[in-house]
Amino acid sequence: MSKMKRIPMELRQLEYFRMTARLRNLTRAAAELEVSQPNITVAIQKLENLLGLRLFDRSQKQVLLTTEGEIFLHRVEPALDILHDALRELEDYKNLSKGNIRIGIPPMIGAYLFPRICSDFQKIYPHLSISLYEEGSMAIRENLEAGELDFGIIILSDIPAALNTFPMCTSELVACVPESSPLSSRTSFRLKDFDKENLIVMKHGSFIRRMLSDRFASMGISPNVVLESNQIEIIKHLVANGIGLACLLDCVTKGNQSFRVLPFNRPMRFDIGLAWKKDRYISKAAAAFMDFCKETLLD
Image (tube, rainbow, N blue to C red):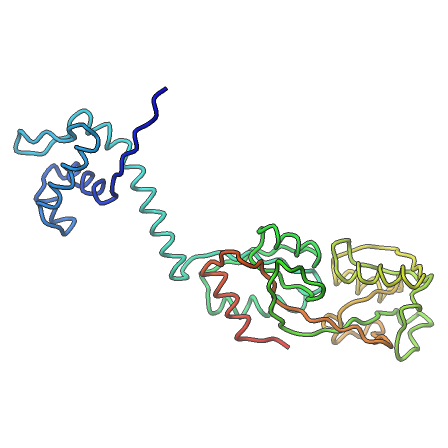
């Protein structure tokens, strides 16, 4: 099988060919395209020389397509339409009149931080859409490294070298204790107080769950995990109903009156911020979101 000949066509030549074919007149085609008639004549001649075929029959008053020209137009015209659609869409993205941003957010952070960010951002950029992926911080980091997300709003601790970060706020881990528990009378909480207690935890993939599991193991603490959930309101409701204890960030417990919120005797504070993959192309829409977050530091 012979190799296909490479033909260095120019987009301009194809546009001139299509307009001439539509109008069947070189002068009208030149006026429509706002170029001189010789420019169109020369471009079409070059195109015919490249193809080794006559595309137009110029022996009559009208410039008519040859059989080969009709076949070529039939193939070229849809391709030009697709290309123009692509260019128009890219222009929309360039001007921020269209775009999508893929953001991963852990449930706890999403419940507190994201509604405020999303609401304010979309007031400024109403034409940009956000696709939200709710996962634990650890799972989001993996998705960022794999290039499946534009950003993650996560706990900034032990961040992989492949990610860039920007801190946005700080939150502290607290113990959530049912009012009915004898432990509710304390003024602070110790990790060892979880030993043998019923505990409600986030699902695997959560940074806080992994961190607590590691600390429990190193201290020989064995809580009784009674339920796993990433639904923050469900966890809070279960604690309020005496099902078990839980560890949550203080930002999602503010205003709570249905259970006791106790600080740890050795505070555990975490920076929360934006993370993205290094050396990855950042779209105009994603760059606008990053700039917005930097300009509206939430703390």
